[in-house]
Amino acid sequence: MAVGAGSLEVIRGTFDGPTTGILLGGMVSMNLRLSTFGDCYEAVALGSASVTVIEENDFRGTKANAIRVSLNPHQIDKGQLVLNRNVFGGAANWDLTLCGHDGSEDASDWVVVTGSGNAMTTGSAKLCPEDANWPSELFEPTE
Image (cartoon, rainbow, N blue to C red):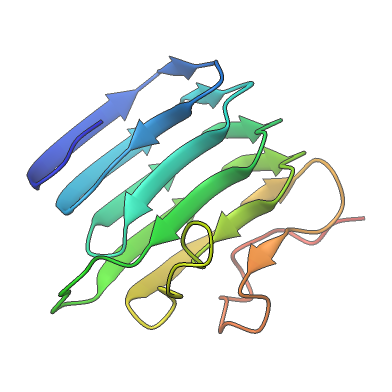
């Protein structure tokens, strides 16, 4: 868990268990690469003010959400979330949600999501809000 301001780099991490794998609050920025998230409640939960790059990770089988972004209170600047070449599948709720936690305010106006080449192992990506302006290249077409 990291809260406040600063930066974090996680490479080749393994997260498995009944809680959140990585929890970021405030304006903490993160680079997350080559990590695996197994039987977590949520793989990654972060605040909308962060600048986060998530590349080449495996998010399969989370109990709730793979990646959840919640609105930071009193946010001034937009955050950024970059997702490249990750594998998603089997999240009970959402693969990627900007809808916060338990009915909190939608963060989609406060975070810019970009990326490409992400793959689903089970059906189509489950995204919240479904009507957000998601980049068309964010997920590879599923067969």
